[in-house]
Length: 162
Image 1 (cartoon, rainbow, N blue to C red):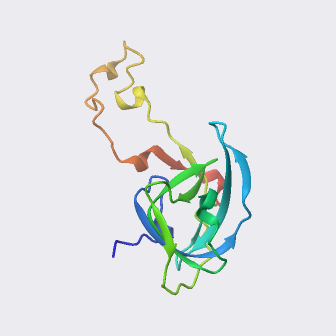
Image 2 (tube, helix red, strand yellow):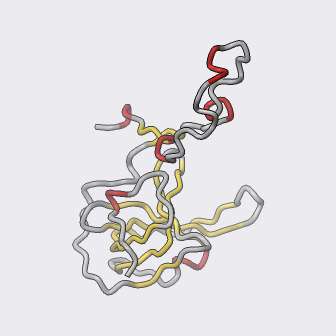
């Protein structure tokens, strides 16, 4: 069995995660127009494990067979940010199926409630502020091979915490 990631351990940079969670809120599908002009149906489902809960975004037919209270196993899922809030996604390379595990959901920690601010890692940040050519940083030893840890691109917005 692939390693299961607990919901409390998900971060904005989480990719290729396997999550097991119980459906605690089954949202109604909404019709939206994508940025590509397509009409799609999207549903938000809240899933929880014993460590916390997160909003799972489902598109089109992904939601049709899901029932409230059902336990789901998401394989190869990923996290995206929607207006700074984490969303778990199945995506085209992931899968979702009913799980046999019995889970006692913990709804106290809401991972989608926290707000994150994306720190854009642009050319100047990677290559030592070369936007100002006369600066002494030009010989920066970073040379673009610096911090490849994607987590550093995200900063938790402390102002929105209680």
